[in-house]
Length: 200
Ligand SMILES: [Cu+2]
Picture 1 (cartoon, rainbow, N blue to C red):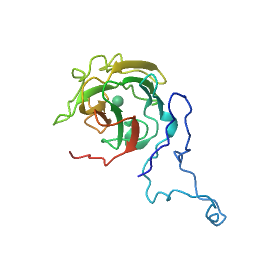
Picture 2: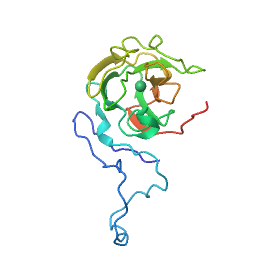
Picture 3: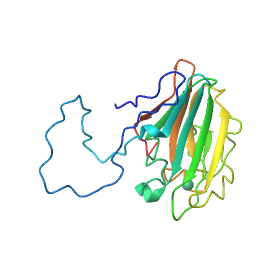
């Protein structure tokens, strides 16, 4: 699994790995020769890629800032967060870190929202109480319109496995959720692609 090389202590440096979010036709020329530097294996499927700019870590302030983009791609009728659906992306943070979720709705059609909820079955049909105080955008049910933003700030003061869930009715059920973990064992936040579970 690919891991982003998130910053080193105290600095706000973020190492960017450009990911192939757009699907362009293959070039007519043959594929280039392998690079001379060590490379990551090429993805063999059309799985979405993590952009390391999405997560910024400040180890001094113990703050994780996550750019959460609703409808980033057309995947799942744009019912996705950062191009992932059905738990395919997991943000993990150490217990008691501060979390800033910079939410933006990039969907040109539908409104979206986001909240951290308990991992419950079945998936709720609409907004429920947030699992962690203040871990929710405004207008959970109505959603935020195209390119509207909301910044959510909370302290990850509860260890466990949660969901980042769109509260607009039906969206979570349709797969518009990713995972959020709060771990007492982890030393720094991470963002990883995880197995999605559409039929969980
Ligand atoms: Cu939504």
